[in-house]
Length: 247
Ligand SMILES: NC(=O)c1ccc[n+]([C@@H]2O[C@H](COP(=O)([O-])OP(=O)(O)OC[C@H]3O[C@@H](n4cnc5c(N)ncnc54)[C@H](OP(=O)(O)O)[C@@H]3O)[C@@H](O)[C@H]2O)c1
Image 1 (tube, rainbow, N blue to C red):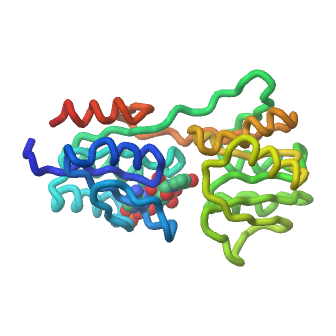
Image 2 (cartoon, protein in one colour):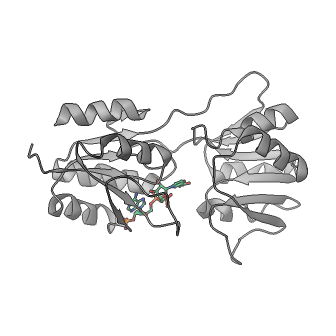
Image 3 (cartoon, rainbow, N blue to C red):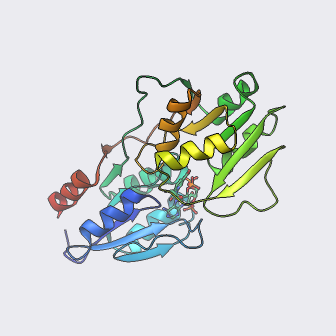
């Protein structure tokens, strides 16, 4: 493998930032972001922003930028970019590793309702609660448009603007981490009786789950989409070792 070849990190997560920091200085590291947020945290090393143009565009990029290795450290619910990375790396024979933080597991006192998708979460929602903290991606909000008699609390990094496809709701802006006490106060202040969450994993947004436990609230937990095949690690350290071994 050529010394000057670069390591591509598909980012947008805390783990991607930590991985870039751990590799920078020893390897030529470039982090790729989709460009969804206007003021993203700046990774160490090089940065590129914006879509590649599907798997074909990513394959072109891998070749033209002399990428030796790719680490998919995107959010576990960002399924399209992960599928594109799998296809582009297969086509260009670029070794690829998925870095996906462990899923959250229910603890004693939790009342989780396991569902496979945002659509399934929406289908039975009104029977479970009517003041709902809806902690899903912006692109999933439309699934909840038909939930009659439900008021939603939403929280996003960037303001949602006027195009929220929901009836009664309040949208607040906030960037994690969101500690337990913060979440407890939020749920109490808004008299939340049900939490809807994706099983994202990680410490930064776990506080809403412990807060729901303390308040005895049910949590509709949306399962992760299946990850593409290939090597997977669940922490930054083994990802660093994988890069070291490859070079
Ligand atoms: N989904 C979430 O809830 C969530 C939460 C926190 C952070 N993020 C981060 O936000 C980004 C977008 O998430 P998403 O759910 O919209 O992804 P997605 O649905 O899997 O991807 C949609 C498209 O966005 C572009 N894209 C996504 N991630 C990219 C990256 N790291 N670098 C360059 N292009 C990227 C790709 O466009 P082209 O096809 O044109 O290449 C991709 O096809 C991800 O990188 C993810 O790590 C997502």
